[in-house]
Amino acid sequence: MTDTQQYALGTIGGFSELVNSGVKTLALSEVLAPAAMDRLYPEAQRVAARNKVQLYRENDLLVTDLFPADVAKGKDVLLIYQGRRRTNICGSRPTRTSLRKAGQYTGKAREAIARRFGRMLSYPTWRINELLAEQTSFRTMRAISAFAPATSSCTTAISIERRRSIARRWGWSWWPTTTWPASFA
Image 1 (cartoon, one colour):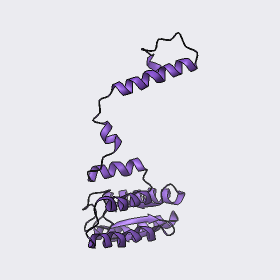
Image 2 (cartoon, helix red, strand yellow):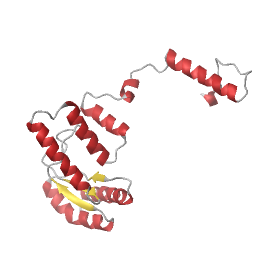
Image 3 (cartoon, one colour):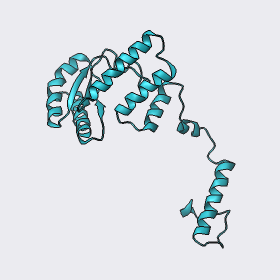
Image 4 (tube, one colour):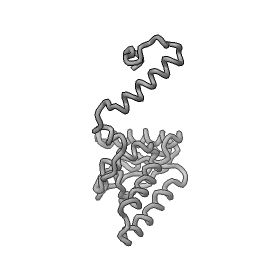
């Protein structure tokens, strides 16, 4: 077994444990060429059975704005899930297909499917937003704040008012309000 296969099996084992424990509802394996997946799949099934999860070999992964469009093109990926989760992801494909045929797999409709897929992968909202920002024109407040100055008059005013509030609460009326010890900053 090659290092790549061992790594992929370790990833499958780790994600299987997360799905089994309820931390994730759906996980994806490494994307592999079909021939490599053929060699890996029997052992992956044993790992999944040991962790009480199911695998579904997908050769046409749902394309959303969470990941580059060509991330799994011509490759296979394993969906790691329990129960009916595979039905949910496969249910998104007809929606995407019908929107694409109608020329409407754009904008908010495309974003909604990406967000749904991200929630199935148990990603927090902030991470979904970051992934969308990497692939589309969507921008998060984190991305916007990266370009804002480190201090602004608004931030400073709030900070001083907050400091005054803390000083009053602790009875530190004698404490100067324009400076503050580094331990409270």
